[in-house]
Structure formats: C-alpha cells, structure tokens
Image 1 (tube, rainbow, N blue to C red):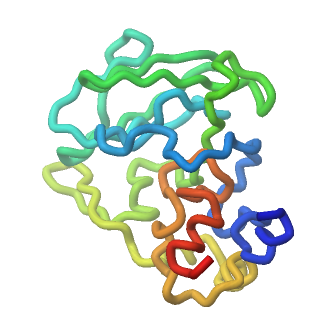
Image 2: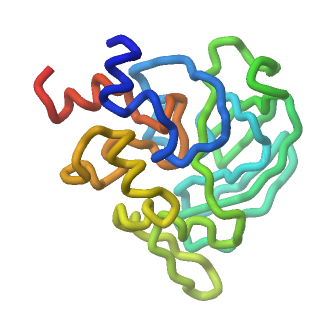
Length: 211
C-alpha cells in the first residue's frame, strides 16, 4: 500500500488522534509485537529504544522485586496485582529485572543515535499527565487502602478530553462507530508503529473490511 493510500485511510498521515506529539522517529515495520504479550510486563517492551528515560515500568504480578541496572527500586502504591514504578534513566543501555523477567532497553541520545543494536525498534509512547494518578487519564481508578486501584479503560469520550472529534474524522476518514473503542487499533501503552498502531494499517482495516 502506497503512502497516498495511507493518507486516504487516515491511519498513516497524521499523529493527531493518537496524541503522540513527541516527534519520535520512524520505527522498524513489523507484523509482530515488539515483545511477547503474555509475560505480564506491559511496559517497557524488551529490546526497545526510547527517546526519554523518564517513564513508568508497568507489570501485572503479585509481589515481584524490581531492579534497575542491578539496584533495587521501589514500586509505587498501586493495588495488586498491578505494579507501577517511575524511573529516570540516562542515555545508554539499561537492564530491568522484574521478578524473574528481564528487560534490556536503550535510552537514545536523539532520533539518530543510540547504543543499542540497529534492529531494536524505536518505541512510541502516549503522552499522559505527569501526576500521581496518571493512569486515570485512560482508566477508571479508585483508591483502596491508600493504594490506587486501576480498572477498565474509560469510554472513547475520555479520548476527546484531549482530542477533537473533528480531528478523528479527518484523520480516520471513518465514522466514529463502530471503531469508537480506540484499543481496537491502538496500543495505548506504546508501539513501534506510527500513531501507536497495533499492526500495519492495511491489516487493521482488513480485520473488518474485505481486502
């Protein structure tokens, strides 16, 4: 599919609706996820490149330890089994150990320079508010025993707190229904593709439309 067709579909030519605004470079195209989806680690993916070392480690596990470059790191007060920890890393290669799971990531100096292998994909991340309960931007949250309990994703109306409906219509060239559930196509925690797409745009469209 050529670039003009992507623009027509509205899933390639604009980053507006996905709310990236981060100026990240093109990622390595692939039909496969960046990391296996079933090990409980939601972020960051293994062997990925980030332009900022200021991010959250997110996983689902009962009582895992967390080490960052060999040093113990505390989790924030989230309700089990969700675990969240904010880290700030300098440019370079880093190791995260989450219980018995290991992650290698690299923080890039810029879009062109990083210390990791060339085939590690550049990861795009969704912007969110920098506050204690930043998960509340997209998830239903409550406080239980002085800990944040993170529930289901909010409806698409939460997206329009930041994005305009007109942006959606222009970007997607598609009526809001039946694709109002953004997670149908977008990986909300991060993706190696433009606009946080879960898969190439052609494949996503073919999931619902005849090719």
